[in-house]
Amino acid sequence: MLDYTNSVPLHVQLKKIIEKQVENGELQGQIPSERQFMHTYNVSRSTVREAITLLVREGIVEKRHGKGTFVSLKPIHDWLGNLRSTTETIQNMGMEPGAQLITNYKTTTPSYIQEQTGLREAYFIKRIRYADQIPIGVERHYYPIWIGEKLLQYDLNNATLYDLLENKLGITFAEADQTISSGHIYEEDRPYLYIEREKHVLIAERIIKNGAGEIIEFEEAFYRSDLYAFKIKLSRKFG
Image (cartoon, rainbow, N blue to C red; front, side):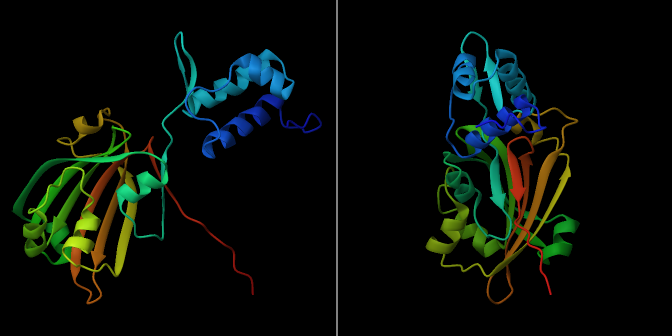
């Protein structure tokens, strides 16, 4: 309930309560009406409207003309420190993962990737990733030729590449180095995510190795920053 003795304004308190309910999955789809919030928290209509305005501004909820206010698409949180696939991340958020193969071919790797992996030639696979049928990212994978040739034996639409590598090809992942930055998506890939040219995206580069230290995959992924976020837990050590 709201704390009327707190110096924090009531509409800010209410906004935080609703936000927490959205994060916990307690509120999904259409949220209660202004009148319901007024009755539940014993506040004025103006307090409710100010709280909702803040939530709309932050993209947590959205107003639909003539229908009401609805929870916006929940950002996908990928916990750092865990080597998991995009499919697993999306499923853990209670959403339906999806993928669409754009292209695949044998290629001479760009100089930057050669420096990172030592691969002069690689099999290139590019896919769009979806969450609840909404495009959230474009993933560009580079594999050693022998791995790429085996992957192409399978339908790469809606497949989880990690599952194919581990369960079908018997390749064991041992470790991965990942770098996360912000920047622009390749112009050729921008239309897949329906984003403006000046918009920044999250860029995640990941190099996966097996137990022998051999490169299994180099991935360069571009995710919509309004739908994809990375989290990491930190702790302070004493003594």
